[in-house]
Image (cartoon, rainbow, N blue to C red):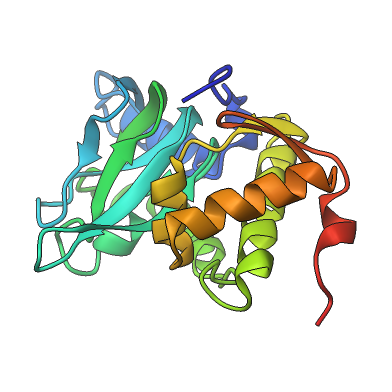
Length: 230
């Protein structure tokens, strides 16, 4: 991944902040103060945070770097489902089944908070608060985002770049100049098109001065105005 690592972000900008704080209070009030409310974990590029089918034991919040979620097809090919930026939470969708739903792989050196969700005693007054916080977190995660593999290919590319820029900006990070994280092949996989098409469109946007591209580093210039409206 070219350029500087994305992040880190402040705890207050993280989606997991309220849940992490409440878990710490519960651990203190129930005499389990030795249990950490959240532990920092570092993942090197290409390493997995968790694998599909393994038992769920924790949820994770990205503090620094970027992660891709992938599904391995029956033919053994890797299908990229999404990329995740600092402040976003991984693993929530797996608690209904008891196992993680997909593979998560670090695109760069990633620092994340690992938060085990303990079996909590009913006597704790904080349990209801934690339940409400988890429901709010789940409801935010359930808000649909426009799938990047829909519409004309040019629109898919520009929508992906603008969405990534916006997500980084909302966390107080640089949404103007950032690393894509994904290779051109991975981006083509995510956008359901050919790598040649992605490369050609990135070069065209560069020539049009909608973006400036240096390897995997992208600077957004006038991308919104270059996106077709029909």
